[in-house]
Structure formats: C-alpha cells, structure tokens
Length: 636
Image 1 (cartoon, rainbow, N blue to C red):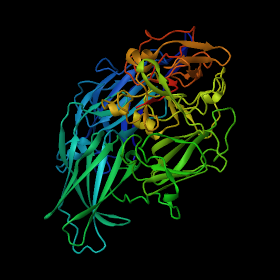
Image 2 (cartoon, rainbow, N blue to C red; image 1 turned 45 degrees about the horizontal axis):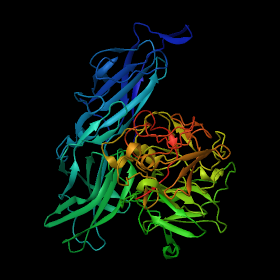
Image 3 (cartoon, one colour; image 1 turned 60 degrees about the horizontal axis):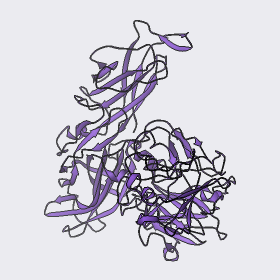
Image 4 (cartoon, rainbow, N blue to C red; image 1 turned 45 degrees about the vertical axis):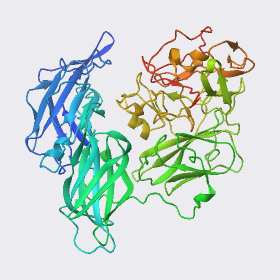
C-alpha cells in the first residue's frame, strides 16, 4: 500500500523578474507536514514514531540543488507523530523558488546521504525489531507554495519474505503455531542513497541468520496457515545456499536455494506439513508480488494460479534454452518454440508467472507490423514460456514478457527473428570472434537498413528502436507503448519497465554487485547477447584495439569495412547513429558506435574517419551510460 507525506502550505505572491518566475514568500509561509500512511507492522503509525526530513532549494526556478549532508533548507529534521498530528522540532519555511522534499523512516543519525549505513534486525521476532527494519523512502520534486497539498508516496526500500506453514490434505492435528523459522545466509547491512531511495547490500557485510517474526494463524483462500515474515536487504544469492530452516517440535527442515531479493518486492514460500508430521514439503514456486501495492499486513494474500494453460503439449515446442539460458533467443524459421522462464543468464526463477505476452514487434523499417506478425501466439506452462511464429515467417524483432498476478513484469526476453541468423567473423591478431552483424540485425549487407539492429542503454538487457533510414534520424515503426522517463532509476525499475527509456546522463544507480551491470570478463546477469556470446571487452586491451588493421569508409552505403584476419574479407559497420541521454535518435549516417563492457572511457587507440568513429566504443565512465548504442556480440 502506498504511503503519503502531505506538505501543507499557503499561497505566496507570484511576480516576473528578469524573465524568471520568482515566489514572493510571506513571513508566515511555514511548511506544515502531515503523513497519511500505513506501515507493514500494524496498519498505522504509532505515537512516538519519527520520520526524517530533508528539504533542498532550487538554484533559480528550474535548477534543483543536490542533496547534501548539510546546508539544505532542512537537514534531517525529526518529525514526530503524536497520534493525530506530525510536528517538526523546528519550523521550516518556504524559500523563494521551488524545493525538493525527501522523507524516510525510521529516523536515524545520518552519516552519508549517498551511502548511509542501515541494518535490518537479526531477531525480528522481538517487539519493534521488524518495524525498525522496514525502511521507507519518498521524494517530491519541484514543489512550491500553493493551495494544494504536496504528496509524497512512501515506498519500501527493502525486500520482504513471507513463509506460510499449512496442513496437507491428510494432516491430523493442529497447526504448529509455535514453530520457529530462520532465514540464513543473507547480508543484513545495507547502504542507502537518500537522494533516490536506492539500497544495495553492504559489500563488506557478512552473512547472518534472521529469526522471522510469527504473525500467528491467518486464513487464506486455500486454508489456514501459520505465517512468518522478515524484512531482507536486497541482494542476490548466486549459488545455492542454506536459505530457510523450519523447526516444528521434533521436525526440522532446511531448504537450499538460490535467490534474488529485490527492493520493494514481497516473496512467499509455502510449506505443507505431511501426514506423519515427520517431514515438510516446501513449494519452491515462490510467489512474487509488488510489496508497495499489496500493503503489508500479511493477511489475505492468496496464491497465484501460476498462469498454467491446459491443452498445450510442450514436447511439440523446440527448446531454445536447451543449450543454456539467455536474455535473447534467435529464431530462424517458422515454428513452435519454448524457453525456460528464468532470469536471463541464470537459473533463477522469475517467480510466479500469471501470464506471458508480447510487448512489441518491429521489422526495423518504416512499416508498422500488425500484432502477431513476428510472434503469433504466446503462453506460459510448467516453468516455460512458449510461443509460435506465423506460418509465413517474417524477419524482425519482438519482446515477450512474463507478468505476475498483479500485472507486474517479472522479466522480458528479446526474440530475434532472422532467417539468416548470423555468421562469425574472425578478427586479426587473435583478438577474438564477433558476430558479423549488430544484435537484432536481420542482414549484414552494406546499405541495407536491416544491418542496423537495435539500440541498448549500457547495462540494460532490453533493446530500443533504432533508425528506419540509413541516413535520417527516424525511429523504426513498432507496436507497443514506449515512453521516456527523466528521473534517476535503478536496474530493478528497468527490469519491470523494459519499454521505458531512462533519459538521464547516468541512467541508474550502479550496484556494488557486478551482476547488475556488464562490467566483467564473464557473461553477466543482464548481458543482452544470445547463448555463447557476450558484450565484448573494449578499451585499449579490447577486441577492436587489438584487431585493428585497416578500415575503409563507404560513402554510398554509409559505413565502414573492417579488414578481418584473412585480409580478404571484411566486417560491415553501418553508421547506425545512437540515442542520446534524453532519448533522442541522433547522428544516423554520421556515427557508428558499439557498446563494450569495460568500465573506462578512452578514444586514444581508435582511428578517426572525419566525424564517423566506427570503433568508438563508449564505455561506462562519463555521461554516456544513458546513451543507446548498438551491440555487436563476441563469442565466449
């Protein structure tokens, strides 16, 4: 359930001075605050609860100031609840221009607004420990004196785990209401950014066990259950670890699992007692829900149906994930296909899938596809996403998403529909092997728009449209609803919103966990390349620098020929342009940049052809992470 922080204010006088709107503030223009919100603990804030508050001023009317540890209009002001009203310890007044307001709960002494340490309790069965672990955060941007209230929607920054212990059909006796449940192998320390509410696990924190709090017996649609819950720092458990331990009288059960706890997400495991009470069956199909939309009382959350469809024989579908899982799968002919519903380049389940659907389709041209031109049907069954193409196969690209019962996108996969597939190009000096075309391209022919492929923001697995012209900045036609967001967002937002271009210079908060980005010599979690390929290494030790011999510019087809190892063949690099950090498509026919996975940014080794830089590989540093460039995948 969303929480709200209301900022009550009076209306000031507005005048125009030197072409700039300025707020004339009356001496009595004091900010008053009211929070109308519910916590996960008991449905309401209680007398004595405290929220921390920061207010920053704009520099001029349109330039927000950065949040700092001090020097703001309000610096970690404690705002206490007396059972009816919220009151700050000192009066806060409106400034001359707009302000940004930040709020968080529970109140604490702040050491660092960028990486504030926070720890969840290891024994959340103790009174107040669970509540103190529930980190909430909100921000209102560009608020100014006005009659209407300014609303902040509080959101959960942590993850929640719920365990339900239920009786099987033949179970005899009462439910063990006094069982204990421990969550093992998790880091309990976190680092909070007060500027955007993102949380990452403390990279130096050790693993601990959390004793989950007992909510007692609750009634659900499928029957009664003893419910336990704990708040967990968002983190990825990459290998199977002892995760859950359930102790009920003489029965002990230890579950090993891999897991990816995400911020603002609630996970539910169901443990079913057997007839003999000497063992416990655990439903590994963990239900996943958007915690910020389901409240948090733990009552009445029923299980999802799981999106299973009858009448589908999965044995008739070709398994695209048989040789390994990925975020992209190639299809070269009409037929029926399936792949495991796991999180990209891993074996982690995406969660409880309610349905699968096509998000968008494109031919990569100015022709708008009809719905079903690339992917005709799609569904989910028994841990697999399955789909079929039309009988008449068409070249193009599409995206398939898995959604949960709350309609939240759990994961999405790129379907690369290209009858040519790709060939491997061997580069000189034993530098490596690359595909002969950009990711998503349906051709490698010079001058063919099909050679452009798709565009990617650095570190994201999901593509965006490129140009439908070899010389004009015109986006290719596609189905689906695309949008552009301008606020800073995390990888988890990108995961749930694959059609949202995040238009900021540095588009996301980089996690301490290297699985969250592309920066590794091994294939990473969000790498967009198919099985057996990865985003190539760049920089002075990368494949393009090591392999460089000669290139030749083609003014007619607008691109470069790159001489390969045998000196008799070439690779084609079209001037596909790119999308800049505000999402605009630019420089088509003038620039042909490809992404690399490296951290650092360097052009020293790159030959320059006028304005066109065919090997100009933008890297992670600087302001380039928000750009959308092609990817040319390298063989592992």
